[in-house]
Length: 83
Image: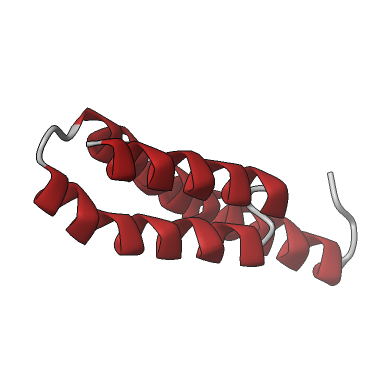
């Protein structure tokens, strides 16, 4: 167990960050899943910028790696073009 005030605060703040990061990551994964399952090109084209923005935010906050975000955005763009 932590013995210093700063260590106790760090434990609390880390837990808050973990919960927030998990929520954002899960929300983005669900959005990617929905976009991949979409059959309508118009609907997918409207969703693509929102999903790309979500991925960029995760990469900026180091929740996912920037290359993973780039790879996902690239594959989703190709998928939408192919519809």
